[in-house]
Amino acid sequence: MDPISLVGYAASFCSVVSFIPQALKVARTKDTAAISIRMYFLTVTGFALWTAFGSMKGEIPIILANSICFCLSAFILAAKLRGRRK
Image (cartoon, rainbow, N blue to C red):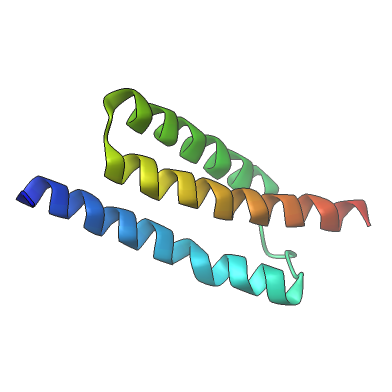
């Protein structure tokens, strides 16, 4: 694997791993009080756009990282929105 791809996969790994603790905490505790809806809405939108960009470019590291981060951040945003309705 070439060095550029290694950097891409390493960045993908870091991005995904950074969201896992927050998603697990929200799943476990249902506590979303400290989470900004605006920030997570923007984050979810950004990950969706990055996934689309990666798909258009055929860049697997971009597609993998951003589609997984999209799912994790969308889960957190949905939990925050559910919490506000209660």
